Length: 126
Image 1: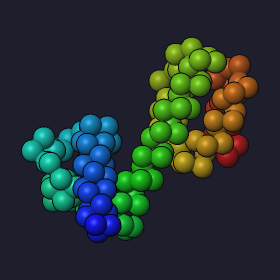
Image 2: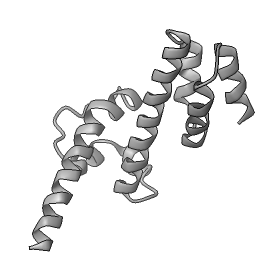
Image 3: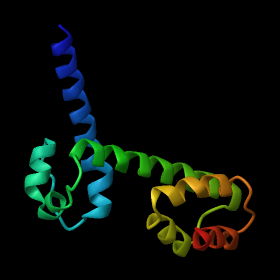
């Protein structure tokens, strides 16, 4: 029984990861690739040589990390937009290139900033 539950959890996790990859991650990171016919993680990997080569850590761990990074990025942008209004294209681009460590640090900064210049300073300090 436990084995069956684990298989169901695994299938559900893979379906969620596949959906996230197809809807959010791949269109922004690899817009030139065609993933429309992909329905599984294995099909996504087979479709993209770049993604296959980049798998230096287990896929589940990598996708989990990407999900955390995307979630942290989304929270940070929401906090900054509440404090500062719409973000400039320059700041948005700088945030997109930030590491997870930097994004986490900037969440704390976002609670107190009053200008984009302060965010840029925090980005360059880290």
